Length: 459
Image 1 (cartoon, rainbow, N blue to C red):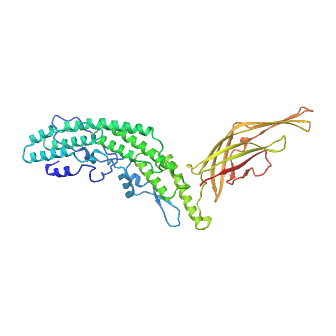
Image 2: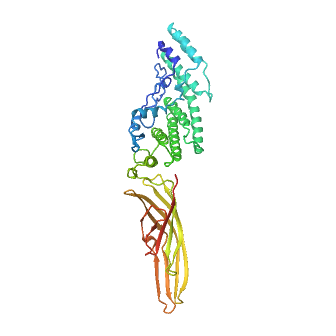
Image 3: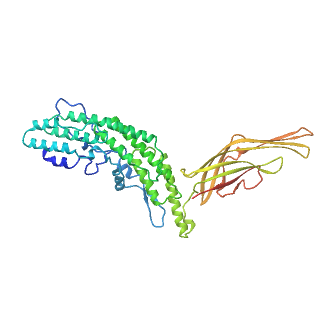
């Protein structure tokens, strides 16, 4: 800093004061090494650029933007550099110590020292700096104290003095306060409840990013890493809350845009699983795709257009059951022996169903006074299913797994001859049913096991 630029320093803070800082990937924070006995050069830490875990150009190519054309389905397209930069700017560390001005007291000292410098009295100017009254640790205004020390360090170096004392004091003051704030925010995040609003509060992210930036420019690398990790956790929690509140069957275009914006922020914050085809990415794509198809098909229906224009659309909020029936070899009648309850996982593409249940049946009777007939069934069952869209016809492929088959036995009281067999519940393997309430598999009664489908969906 040359003294003829003093007016600039007094009128605006460095780095983040009057404009958004340049986003630079993997920028190296200033690491202030132990100085020699006399240091006369100094670069103000606030001149260091701010960096997010991922670059803006990485975000720009991600399909996080919604394209809408008249009477055509929505499409997801790359976000683009302009919108990606806007998202990055929304994550700037605006609460950083670099975003504030020097205090009035230090501004007056800098002005007086500038006058002494112009008079050729640098020795007296240095003495003025050394005797300046600096703000001590104050949890509410600690950034002001750090900023004042950094500005004095820069001014001291410009007139041939050693800035190290001011720099060391600034670093010590910041270290304790940043540690305290990061620990408090970490504890708050650990005990946080799900936000009640559909638009999660992201103010905590701005606070943590500012702490990370402050730590980085002062060479507090461990604290910077801790704060950045906390910001990533907050980003993940923010996106998860937004995703949980996003109902594909109720959400409109604006809700999709909000979710995409939250996804973009979380991406820049380094949340894992968000590259194309990774788990978190796929979960969000499933919700958004379902919502886009639902909205487009709703438009087709409202305008009375041909159903052939509609996109594949899976049902919403699926819950239901498979009723398990057997044909009794003893009574020669059909009996219901249990139900397998299931529900849909709407984050899967295509939608999947999972469920479980229990079946049991016991029968013992004498047929025509001659045949002693008994049936014994007792099994747990796990169920999985996946939707199929076969040329516009919705079907469901079920795969039940039973812990055991059923058994029956018929014994002749006259001859003692026995005949036994099983109800082969696992014998079907996977089977496909129409996604129609009340449909039955197998459709004919020429079997001894049958399933009946019932379900509900909700908008």
